[in-house]
Image 1 (cartoon, rainbow, N blue to C red):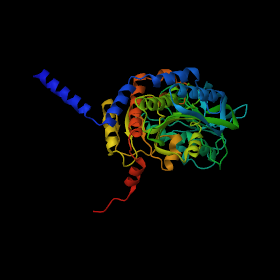
Image 2 (image 1 turned 90 degrees about the vertical axis):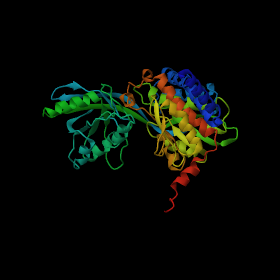
Image 3 (image 1 turned 60 degrees about the vertical axis):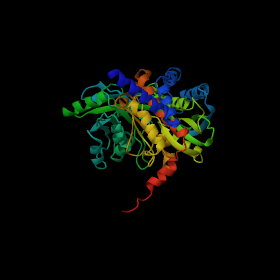
Image 4 (image 1 turned 90 degrees about the horizontal axis):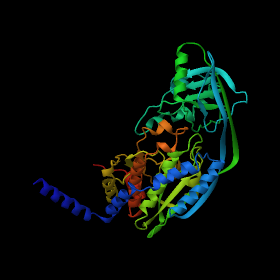
Length: 465
């Protein structure tokens, strides 16, 4: 009886699959190929080994540009080209910090991207310690005059990575808020979830109405050390030395390639990740893995048959210092982008996809939801609000966006640090993320779904009772 029931169930499942609509069957086939395909891992391995760190405006960024052109070409993309845009490049120099009293101890620090340098002899001052960023904001004007402000608030670990967004202002706005209160330099506990002596960098945003002061991130271990020392009651003094240079007339490059649509070549399904990285590691997870996911997804979605719509990949040239977003929007404002997505949250498995408002119940997206359910991915109830920094200006201009959420519980242990290296990339988890992206790109590029119209309908006032 058990054998007979098993046979009947198998026949029923086979009949259901055979009778499934071609769009869903095609998406499932793309998903299954992606789970075993080596393209994504080979992409990030090649980038990590052959290029390595690639800070925008550096010589390595130019090598990354040439590498990316060659890579997209070798993978079969057409119309591979480079879009240059101007940036102000920030290049790191020697950095050093130490506690000078109550007793000497070296500190592991890294300068924030865009920080002004200290004088050659450094800055030495008493510490004004704040356990939370809110405590710093509560300090009155002038209360930090002549001091080095230090914020040691820890970042919580979360699958969604929400702690990073919640604390981003500590790094972005913290230096100017400290300067507004008279500080001569600023240190923060790295925005990181790991316990490590490796500090994590990232960009700051100086405000125009206050002096620009040197700013750096402490390793999580050294931030805890400062907390322990301060608890003993003796005043702390720190000496900080940061060297950097800026180049105002530098150039960055976004590299693009496409698989041209057969029926609607002017309709574009746009995906991408950012080509630049911070300099201490090899940029393998941020954003080598993100680029690899987007590139492999596009290649696989267009591999079985040429898509109806054009699939285009962009490798954005200067995300970390906030330049690529405006340049890409300006270059592509007139394009008919059906939907856009950016991959920039590491190499681990996907668990949720958010869709543009009004589209989750569309037949095509129901097919997509059914396709990714077996690999542990759900389509979220809330609509996507965006997809990434480089796509944000186009999304604000009305381009529909989808967002793929990956497990970020390990990502912030390593990102923006010397620990961002190839060994953190798990090929199986990476391929699961590729499968999530590739099957979506396939459905979007081989259907007539109108995300803009669905978004517009979803925003209309609902009829009364």
